[in-house]
Length: 205
Image (cartoon, rainbow, N blue to C red):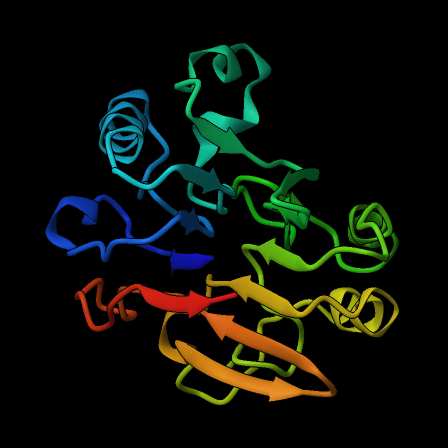
């Protein structure tokens, strides 16, 4: 099964070549302001991709998906995961858009108990975990060296032990690594100056 994975496209999706594959996964920040028009344009584009399965996990810029009344407008061939699971060919995917913070961003949750409530929902037999935030200390450093990832997510990962953890959010930390049997991918396409600097990641799973 070939996965095509990307994140943090911020309205630049039509300028990004998308490789062929079975499943395309977007790990958040498909828009920049989360407006109706931005979201509609992205969803129209995403829904027409030829990949058999399309998975979308929103990010902190994607305000449109916070409103329950908007969720009925998602094209039927897009699987929107907001603290939800989808099973494809026996492979269990779990997606969550929450990011740590107290600012006025979409899906922000206070660090500590509030955000831990979301991570506690992740089934312990999850194969592929998709979050917008990185875990703390893994592909989450900004230029100053400060880590922006989620400490509580880092604590939950050894209990879940997904085979893959896909995320974005911290643009300058795009890349991959493997620790304690888990493969981590920061899928950010744009850098901090909103320039297209990376390509979608191809994973044969």
